[in-house]
Length: 108
Image 1 (tube, rainbow, N blue to C red):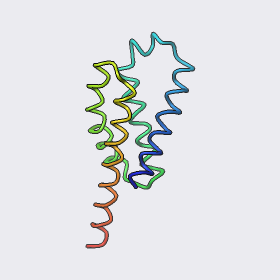
Image 2 (tube, one colour; image 1 turned 180 degrees about the horizontal axis):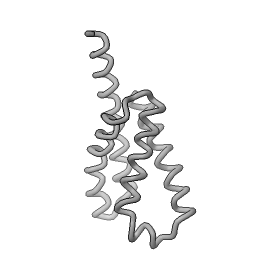
Image 3 (tube, one colour; image 1 turned 45 degrees about the vertical axis):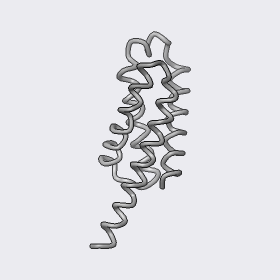
């Protein structure tokens, strides 16, 4: 689950980033990046949840938590390093969520 969720999230972020970069001006990201970035991240997390079979709300919570450390990277000017860190943290969250769901299902 860790590798699957990391791969799906990374592909989603890459594809959406390319589409947004090709369709929107640089000024848009300077003015609205603070909103567009987290929105795109959340959208990709929902796609990841759907593809790997995880519940949407707990997966979104993990995406939000995983995205927090990447804010530091954005502030210091290494945005893509922050995205890689966030993808790794998000994948660990997804793996833990899947494991916990499996344990709950077996004990029921």
